[in-house]
Image (tube, rainbow, N blue to C red):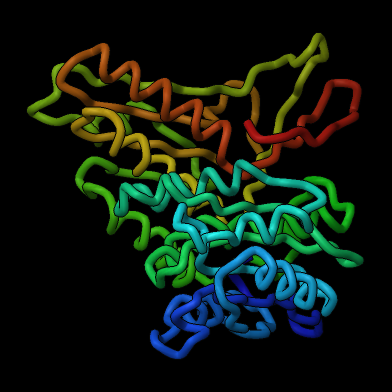
Length: 336
């Protein structure tokens, strides 16, 4: 959810809570809370806060109860997620969560660890609470940088989470919800700034045909002893049923997600360069839906990085597939 709602649609409400003894006591300026408010407003939320409370489980729980009673769709806390004696934001949050979302919490830690190794010590939670309407509640660390990194991960997911909470399935994104181009470019830029840019030649989601040979040529490097590629093509059957074609639809935040995946793999594997592209729109039998290429000094490293890149794209990229069958029926299924 990185764009403003369509005209006439009420902006979803968000509440921001800053958790800090020093901010609460007036000895330190609150920088993380206001930054969260700024980012959320830019994303189209009607934001209440930041509300400042001291560290401790009880102040956090009380603040969250008040926030949830006001009917928001998103509640963010900043601060109190570490292992210090007063860091008890998770303890104040957990009793209110009806459903925990550990995948979001892990993604936040992983993103933070790119620039701050101690981010893995964060115990922040994410989950669903309150209702009706139900809200997504997320604990972020208490620095402005951590808020920036956390919202880079979170904002592309929020719209889908709220759709699911409201009983939605996985339909194509609603008309008018495509984010502004500059917002999408900015999201990708924030990710690229934290990675060796030369390693990621291309990370894209688009509707043009994919040429795997062009990707291989793009990643070729004089230092590479191996260039390996993958092409995922549309097949003519699925679970015993004849398939005539498919259509992929991507979440508006898919570009930022594929950029994050590519940067993650490039940072963890000794590659010279990599590229990955996922196609959207209508595809026919034999068309390439997903292609990736990796160049590395050694073939074992290239194959390992390529396998991880493909699997992570398939696991994390928010795209949905409409399969058309020979009997005239169709079905929507999850990510590729």
